[in-house]
Length: 489
Image (cartoon, rainbow, N blue to C red):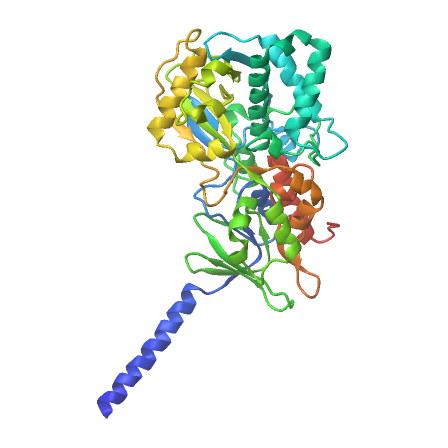
């Protein structure tokens, strides 16, 4: 009997110790605000709050800061695996940040040097004239909803009738130029086909040059500045950053009692007065059902489902010496007869519209693709991608340019990355039926007392500057201001 009592006592003691250990490993740690995701939106929000003295915890699932901005040492300098440019200089938080820190970002000329699939040079003057016309036409959309492809094709046909009627007799050139334009627009929009995109959009360009490059500074410099780390800065004393920390649950008090709890995959629980969620729409599409407790309201779910998340991917090769001018674009214009000879297995190579020499490296070459082909390229063996891209390059440019074997390759995997699930959002015809989709996504979840507990930022929540780094940054600033005294947000 006594031995049995001892055993029961040991079991009871072990259960207490075990319970205590469990509590210690998941003991909530409290902050003013928790920011989930350290891309442009999250880093801007976290640094804005920390600068104001708020105690902030920033949780990033990946092993780096930057989100869909990713600057990588490559070739003889730096390349951008994600966002490439500052789009516009007027009232741009990103551009102004560079200026204030005496960083000279430089404009990149996107005039194309166009090569044909037989290795000859195309009519560069004509092709660039038509490209510029189409890009200008985008700024003057139709009054009624229409796909971008149908709209631009109609506009281009009218332009050719007036300016170049002889071109209308060359059906092969027309077909292949329209396909080239389709691919270029897909890379702008991150879409699979320009008929997936709405000609009508709320997107608004900022004033100034649309392709400003960080060149050898790298886009990463923007994040160094935000975090007060540029030029060996000390950082922000009230900002704590945890990388490799995946969030699996956000529990928020709808009844206004208690704190927001953020549960991480490693079992750690952090608490705060509020949380700013900056993950991509691609991630929200996949995870919102299990991520939020209580669940999201229906109008926010509808926004997540209706806003399309696109894919824009890059294949970047390095060489000992590329022998091409820095910051230059090269377009690939197929001849129909040669395209028809491409095997079904290799047809993805025809969906690469061209390549460019990045501003940050003189020995690298970036190939651009998007949509379903971008998703496919992410899954192909590296040696296959490298070999086929080199075959493509030599087919178009090998007669005129001496091309050596590449010394390395990087490719983006924005779709297969579980923490991005795509590159950025665009407007399709479905979104135009729900004009408030982005605004609804941006609305915070408030408790019974009206206090914002779960806030949302990210490029998709900016109604006019979505798909850009400055739009994402503006959204992070917007949500930080919502939490600061005297804010009118």
